[in-house]
Image (cartoon, rainbow, N blue to C red; front, side):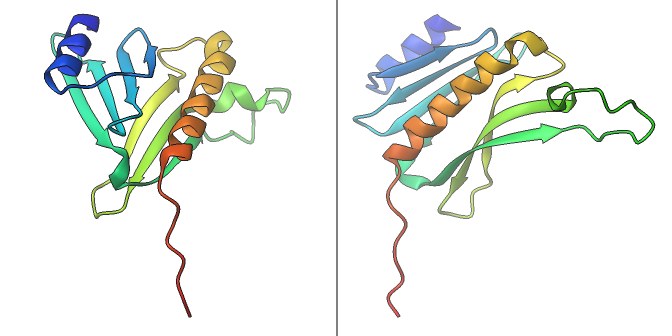
Length: 139
């Protein structure tokens, strides 16, 4: 996967100032060209996507929780109901949002949740600083 990532970065003349490697994906940020490259391992093939930050309206951290059964004891912590943590990119155009998953309860251990959430928050802050300021409406 890293070989594919490096080949794509060379092919598209990208130089990554920030990079994150997970077991099934790699994320890279080229600050100069304002692009993000995401490569995901999809069993037997690699999918990749470029995100142009000039087209991104917002980048937000999203948490999804499973429903709490009223019959369950209330001693469970909220983290035990967390299904996933994603970074969502909303675009200025009509393009659908892109969700980049950092944590999923099915594939990641609850013991890795805090570390993966911290990484997601870091990327949210990193990307949000690079987004253009919203245009102010003049009345």
